[in-house]
Image (cartoon, rainbow, N blue to C red):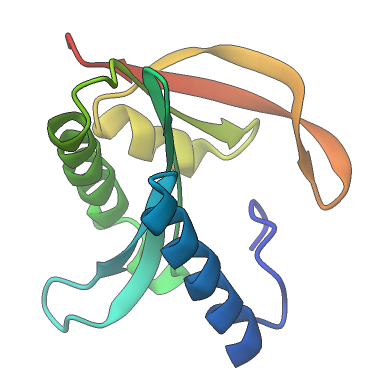
Length: 143
């Protein structure tokens, strides 16, 4: 929870609202939301969201339950959804994602999934209402 703005407590109403917004974005062609499930138990352990595409670019965000971390599942999901995005959207040539400075685990996820570090964007995002620096990563169709 340290690196996300996911509401706490996360109620059923919060979950319903997320699903409703995700469906609307999907129907409008502005994104897609995916559950990350445990390969052994099939239990939901996280989420990955495609934002866009927006012209030639698409962006991803994700989270994983703490008990599921360190097993390569987020990297695998990011790689799979990145590949799917490139297959489904021929106009997309650039995939993007980012992590707040200090979120080293998320940066490893991105690197393992084939994304390359581009640099720090100062106060590019906000976290809990405060401007925050982020490390930007990209993957190009040609890579």
